[in-house]
Figure 1 (tube, rainbow, N blue to C red):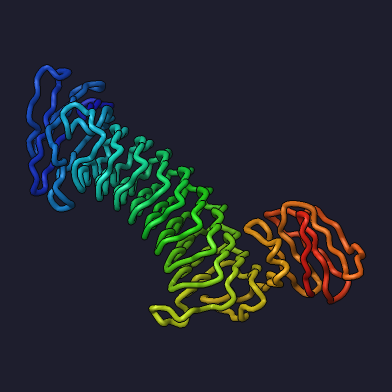
Figure 2 (figure 1 turned 135 degrees about the vertical axis):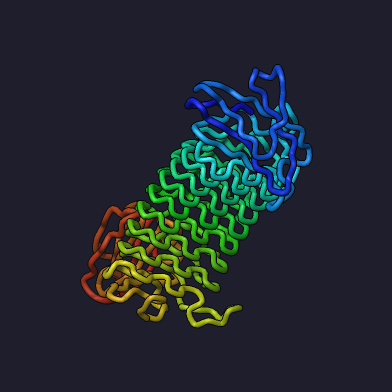
Amino acid sequence: MTFTAEEDGSRFGISNNYNDPDIQYSLDEGATWTQLLDEEMITLEHKGDKALLKGENPKGIAQNDVYYTKFKMTGSIAASGSVMSLIDGIGESVVIPSQCCFYRLFINCSSLTQAPELPATTLTFKCYFDMFWGCSNLTKAPALPATTLAQSCYLEMFRNCTSLTQAPELPATVLTFTCYGDMFNNCTSLTKAPALPATTLDYGCYGEMFSHCTSLTQAPELPATTLAESCYAGMFEHCTSLTQAPELPSSNMTSACYNSMFEGCTSLTKAPVLYGTKIYDYFAHHMFKDCTNLSEISVSFSKWSEIGALHLEYEGTEDWVVNVAPTGTFICPKELPIEYGPSRIPEGWNVEYICNDDAVEDIANENTRVWTDGLNLYVCYAGEVEVYDLNGKQICKEQGDADSPVCLSMPAHGVYVVKMGGKSSKVEL
């Protein structure tokens, strides 16, 4: 691993917390090596001066989250080369040897402008926990090639990296306990999130991952259809520039899965459709709280609470719509009781119904919704929509849209036949 000065007089050193790893440095391209002592500061006198670093630490740099070593820096320093040279002396290993191995290694190094390479493909519990917390001049995250994760491996890794504009690719498809928890929390310059292809989730895996990323405008796709407890809790909390929420395709919600997921997203105007028909303890607690411009919510559940472990009246949607837009549209099944308040339907909003006629279920899917309001038939469907009366007379024919509902006005109350995609269904107004 190499430290390169980006301004004259830049300095680096280490600080040991009940720890004593082997870390050596060379100022002459590796001709001679000197042990880096606790609290000693090494000066790179001129811009462009380099220090090489290595160590023989087969059991890791840190022993745990109490006994660990961290770098200290002043000036401006760019790191390069493999951080694994601190483990094997040459930087060739791709196996992290211990839990908490690089815990807080560069914490609050505001002088760090470039991170070293992190080539490991075998991770361990909390191996990168807090590694770059507070590196406020770091603009780009290093590549993270591991596809098999460990519990809490990236927990708070880049928290408070306020200049970070580029996140690494995250290719893992099977996640672990809190693996991405708080990973980019308060990365206020991050404008684009990495793709998140995972389909197997675990407890808290995305918890507060992008919380307070105030420059993030669009969320990544979230393809998982089986959720885990607290999996998305606080994921985009206070992302004040977020204008488009991801689709949430799962129809199997679980405890606290959406807890505070979009709380404080003041630019969000439309909520993702909630397809789950059964609610759980705190599944949407504070989900849209303080989304001051949110004006559309669509749900599929037909009652407000289930008797769960907590036995609370509003355990599912407690305070989920506090301080949303004063007017809007709430779309729900006809069976859902029309109740208003911070834990129900927002005060001042209109209610529209999803038609739950059994026949409509034949054509309904994640990209198709049908509901009625008075003599109006609303359809979200990417294709041609035809409506007939029971005598076979065509009432109307329109081109539908999957994202924006088409309003079809019917001449009278009664039963109509809706044709979409080669299927027919009866709808009663």
